[in-house]
Image (cartoon, rainbow, N blue to C red; front, side):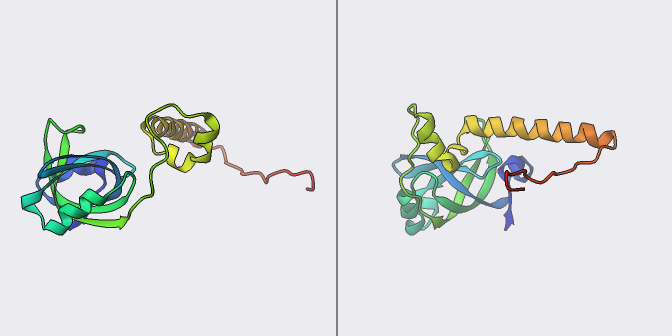
Length: 162
């Protein structure tokens, strides 16, 4: 089975794939569970139908908490109703690590609180967008100087004792 990153899932529609990531969100409708999985490149909705998987897999999905690490396997398919246009018909779920209670909720938090939980705050959509823009700006400025044969020199950190 092929491991796939979510930003390339469209190239694997109809194939059985493996996705490694974190549970972003979940909701349940009786015999169907919808797991939103994030892998750092994008999100995908995973659909877990009780009659299509072993009972222990379905129950394991119930125990997942937000940001738990998972490996999911299933068939990638196109679906306009899914948030990203694709979904995964989950056939297997492996829990890598159950996450503790996620401290950052949709309510407003102070700067100090967010900085104390920075490693989690960076996983939010807004922070991810900021990091992607920052990455692109650095890449373009680096390319500008490379195209003009400049050499990057990393100077040592200057300290009072130096």
